[in-house]
Length: 303
Ligand code: NAD
Image (cartoon, rainbow, N blue to C red; front, side, top):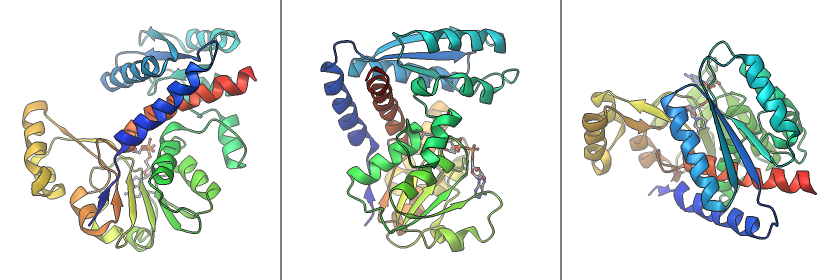
């Protein structure tokens, strides 16, 4: 019988811990969120981040630029925030419009204020196993595993996906926890032969319900990082069993889509020992970890 790992409870505990630490500080940490353009998903993410900051007592500021802002103007704003001593964390919500070089923007954020952990300096420190500000999503996965008392040390962990935001840092963090780590990606041959050996399987692919029974080892811990909008009713029928199917089909009818991870929940239920749901799993941890990172950034910088 699969055990569902709820991100909700763990995220709430982390936020409570952050709030308690913030209360002890004479000046609360300050997070500055920059949004560019009117991407619908970005607006939701930014609103969630600001709401969470408020809940834990972190001061938050939000600068919303139009999509026509130039790269130079955005860099100038980040430069100002880098030297503003009252700001502990700077977050630029991705994606940015195509005329702006995302890498250049992320590299311009001062590593000490890089609460997303995307700056190459912080990525390099993570690679070397040094104290750093880690990317929120993989850090959230580690929290889920640890707080659910799932052993990582010595286990075979397979990460599917090699992005700088999720896959690569995820692999580094699992290595840091003494797992034996394999990274798979779009060019991996015989994917299921590798994934079916994983004690811990992390899917960060971006393809709805891609991971099926054949990919999963009996009893494995399956962590689903993917967030995909599914509009196709026949795919919904394929991915969900009777316990959830009706609710999901209703969502497609009413909202036009339902959110699905990279793992087929039906397959995970049949094969996995532990499974994170979508929604309600890793996604909730990402925001909680941003709060934790902002607290950490302020503590490291001020001390
Ligand atoms: P990405 O597109 O940058 O990377 C996807 C990775 O999947 C690539 O490295 C690619 O090699 C691999 N891949 C693609 N097709 C594959 C295949 N057929 N077989 C094996 N590997 C394959 O995406 P990303 O930014 O890393 O995000 C991955 C997923 O995680 C997306 O669904 C995204 O929405 C989600 N995500 C969730 C959170 C969260 O808070 N839960 C945060 C970030 C990303």
